[in-house]
Image (cartoon, rainbow, N blue to C red):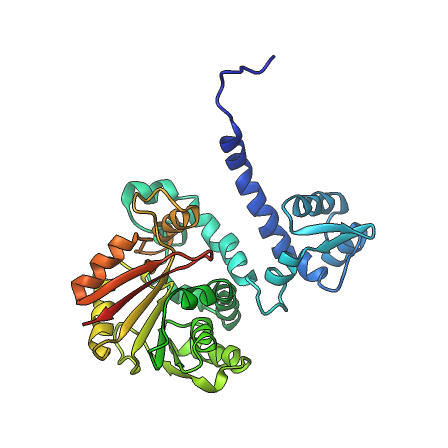
Length: 341
């Protein structure tokens, strides 16, 4: 049957039909250990099938899928990791995002299946999907290994974004950079590297601090970064003249954000600042893609969402901040900064 020349281009629909298949190619290969098995160099399908206890024909199809999506390359009659797979999908890489990749497959995938109910009800899907009543973050740290790999997954995001965030704003006049919910300390490290006169403090829950010490201790600015344990909603905040919130506010509702921003405002000296690192929605909320999809992810997972610069400005000015400025970056996070009167 000849194609109808008046029919719209079906490419967007076809690409979206294929999108979840591409994701599962990556998730499955990572879960089976394909990328770790290739960390030492190329291997044939037969060798990988033996090592991974997989059916050779089925594995060949998966390897072909990984090649098609840019994660593997054909080499010497076998398969090899591409640079992206080697950096982000192998256990020994310091830039690995494997923990977040596996979390996306094991946890988020099931929750996104209930997106329709989230849209109808306007609430996250933890109870529906898993029967969990406790705050979602308590489930990230059920075992030491889960905690470590989830934080390393977020660390991979941080290594991409944090240098862009601290370079987008001028922090040269500040002396102490306190990263609230700082996880592995990547934002504090990036700030100290970019501003030689700055000292950093990583503030997070007690169970996150040992890994932060380990990661920051291996950097060239370790001597300028301190650590403090606590809950930023209830415990005293370490003193500083700039407080950072990296991928924090999008987790929470407006009342909780106002509570946290008020605590920061009260802790800051006059002229101090708050730095927010989140991906900004366009004013009409039509994009960019990363922010729009992440906002849906926040609906499914949390009580928060992604916001426009105007929405952040409204929250900040309600508390008393002024001089709100937003800066787009080419990374997964943008920067918003505001100053205490």
